[in-house]
Image (tube, rainbow, N blue to C red; front, side, top):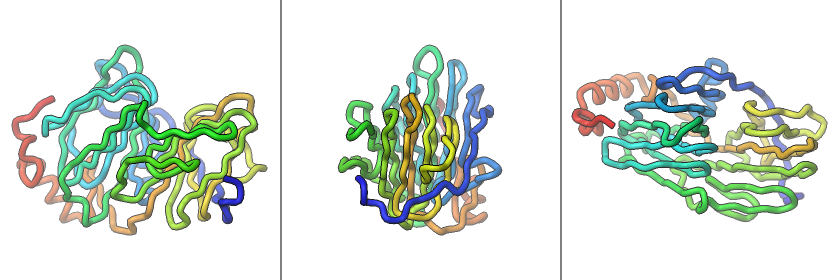
Length: 288
């Protein structure tokens, strides 16, 4: 990959995602969607979640965006008011386009602690009211590539010459990298996109070889450029996700699990949900 990147992206902001309570008894480390960083166009939220039965995320609605759930440990069972249900285990991916409306639940499916990442991606005004859809990929079917001490799982987009089959309505890249000690990565990123790193394990140097190492649970917002350089100068493996997306540049009005472009649309959404109309019809009689 050397020489592919001409203008390197540097880290412009860094946050430690601290644990907080969410759902019913769940613990999340929220990095996007907190008071210091409400929105990073097109990303609305990033949670590293940890949940053990009987805690979880019982029946709740969404409208106007996508939820991307990537399991790191254990398993979660989900079901919705359309009759869609299943279990995603470690390494599995669920890319859910809520569109005009979904009511669903996400609950632990195994003993012990279930861990994963959930990313919320905004939809443009023209796509907010589309029909809901799912894209699900089992761990063994996620595209992978390895080279020079670098392993990548290509959840969305492309890396090391390998592409994901996931269709991203809001153009998005989502890459899960593991770097062995002593390895160095140079990864292109579309120059017009916003991008960030979230560190899962180990510690790494991002953007500038002279900067200090960054440890797990930190979110790094990247500045402008057409790619990122990463070094693992430690004695342990470094694992992180690199996520980028094309900014929508549209107004964002959010009330909890509803994200629209105006207050009027939010008021209409709340009314639709309360009255079980305009996409929420099946919510009237459904319980998980």
